[in-house]
Length: 255
Ligand SMILES: Nc1ncnc2c1ncn2[C@@H]1O[C@H](COP(=O)(O)OP(=O)(O)OP(=O)(O)O)[C@@H](O)[C@H]1O
Ligand SMILES: [Mg+2]
Image (cartoon, rainbow, N blue to C red; front, side, top):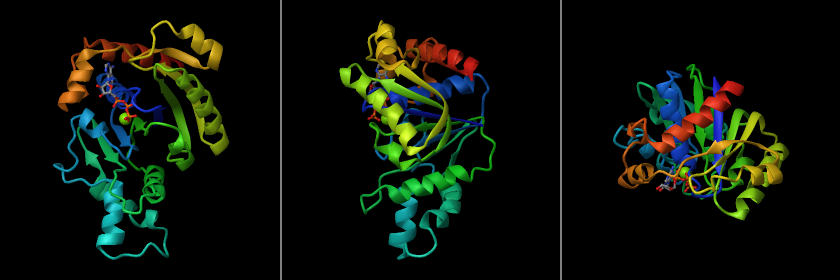
């Protein structure tokens, strides 16, 4: 079981990258997969054609508010994140034929994500099913690193946007990951769909991190996302999908 975390600044194409990575792994028969949407402003489910609500599944935040607010439970005593662990697997996990998925969600009235994050972390630590890969999609920015949803990961992808700030971001991200004690085996910088194609020299000069390539800018991907259609259904000829395949071929050969 390998855990892959995707992060980066807002809007760089992280979620679509995770969806295309899922398509790639499904195509390679590297299943079952677990997809985790750790972004409160979730959209990974939609990008892989899952409607959690229609499937009768709840987000972790919904389960928490349901358990501790609607049902008048208290958050004092037993660690609440432990108390809802079973509910996450029973009521939160969407189970498909090739991948399962759950989402941290937004409906947490107190505004702090500490509790949903702690619940997510415990759930990830108590996985019993043998997934080939766990793909975690993060919210934009670095704040989620402090929450340490996963502290032991195999691969981290930082998807870079087309601004100078992306270079500072990736250096800071690398440093913060070390500071908060997240351990990883490989760290890669990926050029997002809007990143310049010929930036490898600059990435090398400014970050000294491994850079297996760019995600291609693909109108088909943008159209799918806009229409709320699953990126798993995009044709194999999609330039973005092919570029993600090239990245994954390299990275998985090294891992
Ligand atoms: N490969 C691509 N080619 C063209 N457009 C893309 C591509 N990937 C994503 N987009 C467009 O960029 C937008 C943002 O993509 P996405 O949601 O994947 O980014 P994100 O980094 O996850 O954003 P956020 O930080 O808000 O979570 C999408 O609405 C989509 O239209
Ligand atoms: Mg996203």
